[in-house]
Image (cartoon, rainbow, N blue to C red):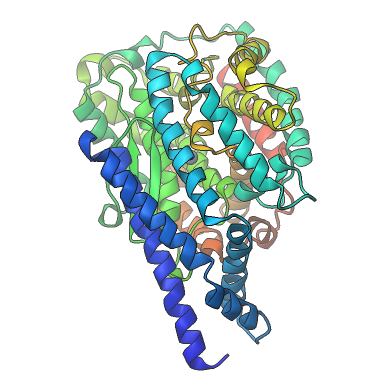
Amino acid sequence: MNSTGRLHTKKHISRIEHYKQALSLLSWDAKTSAPLNSQKQHATIQGTLSKELYLLQTDPTFAKELRHLQEQNLNQLQQKQVQHYWNIYQKLSAVPLEDYYQFSVLKASTHALWSQAREQNEFKLIEDNLQQLIHMHKRFAERNPHLAPYEQLLEEYEPDVSSETIDSLFQQIKDAILPLLTKIKRSSVTHDTSFLNKPFSIENQQKLGKHLLTAIGYNFKSGQIGTTTHPFSAGIHPQDARLAVRYDEHNVKLAAFMFLHEGGHSIYNQQISSDLLDTGLGAYTSMGLHESQSLFWERIIGKHEGFWRNHAHLFKELEPAIYGDISFETLYFALNEVTPSLIRLQADDLTYLLHIIIRYELERDLFADKLRVSDLPSAWNAKYEAYLGIKPETDRDGVLQDGHWYGGAFGYFPSYNLGFIYAAQLREAVIKDNPDFDEIISSQNLSLIADWQKQHIHQYGKLKTPREILTNLSIGRIDAQPLINYLKKKYEGLYKL
Ligand SMILES: [Zn+2]
């Protein structure tokens, strides 16, 4: 291809990326601060931009250029770039524009209907839409008869990790965690932790959040904090990585860990090399690896004793009437306490894994026609009883609590556990390079950790696959054992087992 052709391809790619960034901004706005009456017109604008994006990505001239480039001598970045857009082209061009558009509308309207169903605690309201979403996913999956529909969905979030691998990783986790939970239940170590549910003003929760984000190295000049119903991060581009959280006056623990979780995602988004801006590769490499970074900050660092030795004073300063007399040991225990609960977002390290396993098993069975949509609420409740020994009283606290499925995101949930597994493997790799890991956390020198992540993971964006990142760190394959070892040691210590 001559230089004019290459310049055309480069400009075309920039246009694609700018449409994506604009859509991401609109989506941020819709989920955080857009006025109620703007919804309809904004949804129409999103629809128009999405159609344009589809047309740009499936443009026949662009496809011809990509095919031509595949035969040229390209550097690594160019090769990955061409492959990236070629994959998108192949996937999208197999779906007619009308179907693609209808599916986008169905996803958006079902997600909006879910909020209503959740509020009214009425699963029936959403049942037909959910059925249609699954049906459309299956229909789109027909384009690739060699791979089962659910495997195709998994691949979108975490390449190279099949349901067979997930089955075996999750079985290993269940075998280790369920007996550990039984032992914890019998442990005599206990504290009154009800102080965490005493009113902690929203204003003070925001102050706490800002302190924690600053401590872990979030750059406020390249991001901002919003308020939403379901917390999320929006990596619009590396210079604009925002996060949105929700507040509950009676649950400061929820806010503290949400800030650390979304902060972890956002540090990843901010540390992607700006050389990759508008190349298509300037984004996270996989959902599993993205979650590994949020869970690393939320759970490995954010639940570390040394971390709270430095930050416990914030509780005392912000709400002295409640925290003035609480000892460090009691606060640290309360922040790590293991108690089976119905809501995933509030779950401790151990039961969190089971919350995800339940969702994975249900969605896998839905796609294998082993479970009907109408039976989903009762199947959900039965699994909570079997794994956690508790049963939701309402669907709001059960099958309607998370929005993922209702926005069409099947195959997403396993990413959380895969992320936690990666996080523990990455913890071992950080320790190998920094044997004084615990002291680093206690010394408030957390930029050393963020710099390590930038050097080995973040800067590359999509330039390296998760497998390449793990291989370069001599980690090899995804393995649940480091996570199991870490959790056992930590919680056997905390509960003196
Ligand atoms: Zn996350």
